[in-house]
Length: 156
Image (cartoon, rainbow, N blue to C red; front, side, top):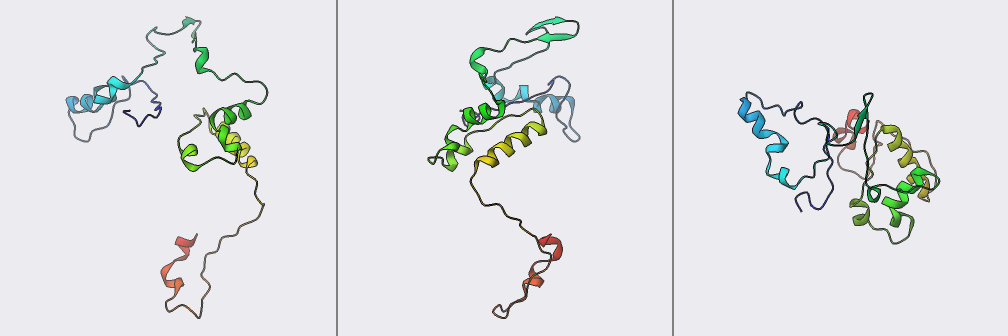
């Protein structure tokens, strides 16, 4: 349970992107890298480089992903992702602990926005327009001024 039983995805070329240690020696930098950490033994490495996976053809590499790691989609892919990851979100039995224990890893911000919009549309709520304000209304019942407590910059 190194990462609290959570899946953690680390990306990059760990041979090229080293941590920055201010005024550190080469030994300090190497010692601070992820593969020098005690956590490294608990990591499952899925490398694409070094000829470990796939077959290179004209600069492209095909990677076989195990079928049990793939989501079988019939119809709308966003709906399938949400139903697979947040199935209880659609029922009344959903609780915050259930939601806290799940996440969708998206490749681009556009996909994130699509998923957020899809899930927002699932929540029954009244639409409304909410306005902000940059000043505080004075009250006769208060002994101190909220205007002194909250500046317009804070309110904005």
